[in-house]
Image 1 (cartoon, rainbow, N blue to C red):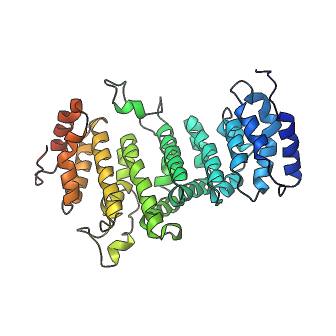
Image 2 (tube, helix red, strand yellow):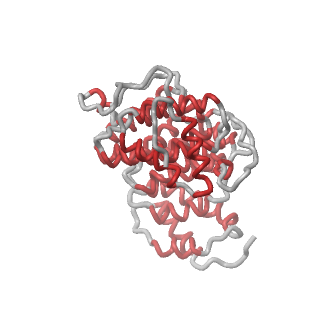
Image 3 (cartoon, rainbow, N blue to C red):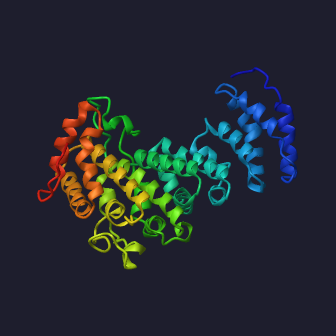
Length: 370
């Protein structure tokens, strides 16, 4: 334990006491910043019991921008486990922070939720907090701030990784292998996967948010952000558990643009049994929105490239082939992207990617692979 005195600690402690008594008092940011800059892995443990309960109490009542308070709180939370944090912050407190208009409060709540990615047991505990899970999904997809969206995608990806019921991939044979991206060392319990993909209310909330049916994403700009966030995460989720994201017990409704007479797709609505992967890849995006269309193309490039290094299965090949059959049918931009994909990767992998594309392309679709 570090016994070096922390300059300004007594003053900050007294300031916190004042704020606990009256959260409307003016904040002294310098006191927070000075102490935070001196925090280390060695001295943080001795300060947790002294400062964290006060910070938690203030945050529950503070009505102004809590960024300075949040920054210090996140630093102090670093060595604390998810279950330990729950003794200080209830599910209701997490939901309150996620619903806050302050991005700092959103990031704090997501930082706490991220701690559940430390083990499958912690992820299972989080899965038993459905209101917190839905509040998290809504904030991740509906937040206007880029940093909140990026944090949410990282958190959800790590949670579903540690909770994935499938065994982790075998040891890597090369530096670019998928195993460099996998967190879990053993199979998880799958409870977070079931909470999101097999709980109808949670799953349909997600679908509503990424299709613009939810009021939080009904404006075009926010819908574009939400769709971009799901498209950036989906390749990782497909690599973790393709079947979970490509099959669903629920049939998703058609995206609103597909029912208003302006559909750019060749068929309306997802088929029965199709999952989130097909919905996002084939039905979610209105291709008249060029920016989101380009994001969709980026998704396909990442998805095809990443799936090449996952474990081989006939199901994987047929699933990707079916998606490409639909996607390439009326999308010349995507066709051009797929033709040039081998050239856009590193030279050492170009031939392997070219062979992989030939394997998953439908026989009736001829691409001039470069």
